[in-house]
Image 1 (cartoon, rainbow, N blue to C red):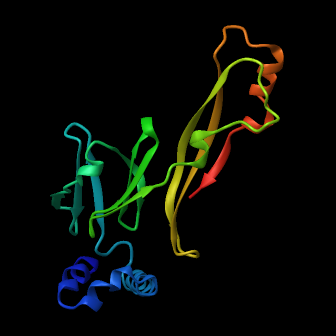
Image 2: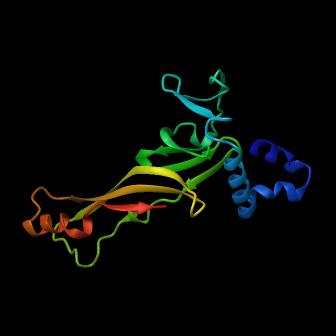
Image 3: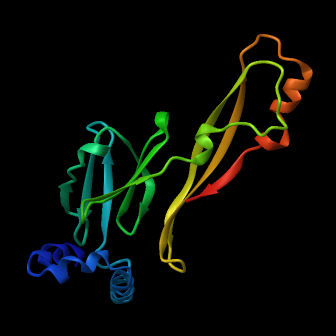
Length: 189
């Protein structure tokens, strides 16, 4: 088990570096998934909304329940139930577009970089007459593991909204604000 592998890292420095080696981890995942079916050694994540707790359920009939201790960085973040792949859990803080992936087994965190479109500046062809600003909305549509590329992927829909700082924008500005360059698009990380 990965937990034992991490624990035995204190025996020898080369053992502690195994989990950082992509070739070893790929081999480990391949052997692990070919040895175990999805019905064996399965655990479920239970999200208790009232207490804002996450619990791991395991055992033949999921009788073993262990509360997960969330790292301080994600303690206040929103857990998405569909955001789980190979034990990696997805958390987000939608108001600031912060996304964090957490592996409870190894306690490793990965903060996903911000979208380059969050600080959108319009192309030169969009020269608005009225003062304008742009707001970016990111909507997650999927998170999973790509076995072919041996990588985790996020896919989200990005929408850039044009906000006019005038009560009556011109017809020309309204057309520019609805133009092709501001249509929603997909991002994959």
